[in-house]
Image 1 (spheres, rainbow, N blue to C red):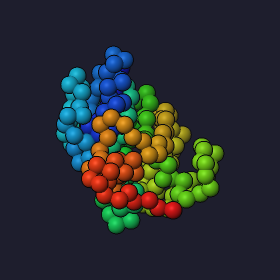
Image 2 (cartoon, rainbow, N blue to C red):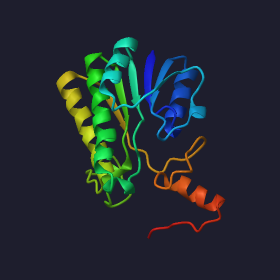
Image 3 (cartoon, rainbow, N blue to C red):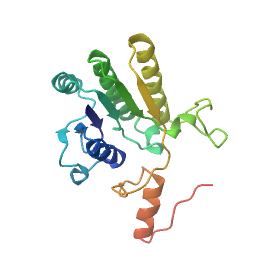
Image 4 (cartoon, one colour):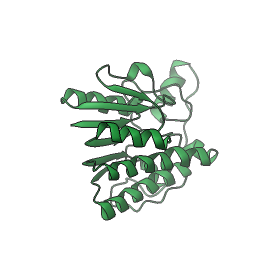
Amino acid sequence: MKALVTGGAGFIGSHVSRELLKAGHSVVILDDLSGGRLDNLPSEATFVNASVTDHSLVESLFAQHTFDYVFHMAAYAAEGLSHHIRRFNYKNNVIGSVNLINAAVNTDVKCFVFTSSIAVYGNGEMPFDEGHHPMPEDPYGVAKLAVEQDLRIAQSTFGLPYVILRPHNVYGERQNIVDRYRNVVGIFMRQVLQQDPMTIFG
């Protein structure tokens, strides 16, 4: 199969890309490198340095490659910062996703895999599971839930199969520990390495 991995130069996307390649699939990575790094890219993948918000480029990419699967990992995942960058948040995380969903519908993609977030639950009673009613409390969570709902409608209207993942505090090899606003484990690692006090809430 041929797969598109958005955000494939990032932490999760680079792992997904490598697993797909290991399984013998063809991979195209779309990433604007705003959060990812070139050295995260597997050499066997085709790399396109661009943003999911570029509607024309997304359309031409789907027309050129006829993807079987889309793994949408690209996002600006600064949850706490999203209150202060609302327009940027919605453009990147909603409009960019809609560009991909439209293209997937128009080219009969077999399955659209979307990386959402535990942020869709807000500050509800823990532990969370799939049965909990989503109630986001920041624009980042709102954006992720909006894309989940758009996928639901795309499936019911056009038959687009989809899978939604809602990860929380992921960590591991190739993780970005420089960004002060994303990924609590990375933030702790950076603070320890710089011998700064660890920021703990609650």
